[in-house]
Structures are given as structure tokens and as C-alpha cells.
Image 1: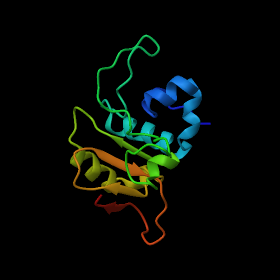
Image 2: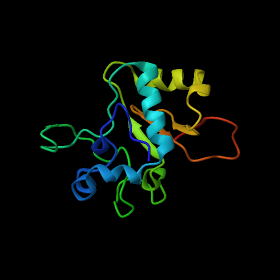
Image 3: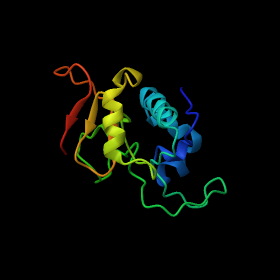
Image 4: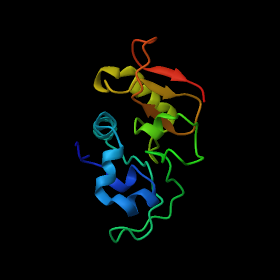
Amino acid sequence: MYVPKYFKPYEFVSEKLFKIYGDDSLLFVSDELKITMDAIREFFDVPIYINNCRIAINSEKFGGSFQNRGYRDPFTSVGAKLSQHKFGRAIDFHSPVIASSTIRKQILENQNLFPHIHRMEKNVSWVHIDSHLDYKHKRIYLFNS
């Protein structure tokens, strides 16, 4: 199992899931996605936020509103029934320093650095990436939700 260099396990899952599984909750997220998030963090060299809604876990306190941007429990009502998030193959994130549209543009221009990204959502205020292989498209496919 790949352990991310720049992200803590609780950033990839909901607070509920982390309280049950702790650091083992990383098992719910594909290695390809964890590797990709580290590559994105290194490429842009700025803070990247996935989930930030943890309160008093590991003595860290967060007051953010995001907790369904990584792996989503299959029984949650958040997102589509067969969302890639529910298979551990999708992440939503943002940076407080770089606009999401700029991040998407740079990822598209440097696709060779991110071989596990197969789809990105367009026209949203965050960045959605997933590793769902779309055989109709050779590289990163942009879609609308």
C-alpha cells in the first residue's frame, strides 16, 4: 500500500470512516490516486486541500466543511450511485493559492506527469480527478457533471 508523502490518511476519507479505521482507511483509496495527489502537490508546490473537516483527530483541529471529497462510503447519499469516489478512484481538491481552472489547464498541458488521471470534471470551482479508465479516449477526458 502506497502511503502519501504530502497528505494524511484522514484527508482522503470521511471523519466517520477515519474514526473506525484510522490510518488503515488509506486502504479504501487506490494507490494510483494517492501517487497522483503527491505528484500534483510536488508539481504545483502549493498547499492542496482534499478533506478538511476533522475535529480533534491526532491533536489537529480543522474547521473546514469538506469531508466527502475523497473516498465516499457506498451507502452515502452524496454523489452519484456509481461515483468513482465510492470505488476509491476519485478525488476533489482545491488550492487556496492557484485557481482550479489553472490547475486543470496545467494538468492537461503536462499529462505525461500524471499517467493515472483519466478524467477531470470541467466547469466546477474545484478540481475533480479520477482514474476511471475511459477506453473511448486516449488521455484525460473532460466531462460535465
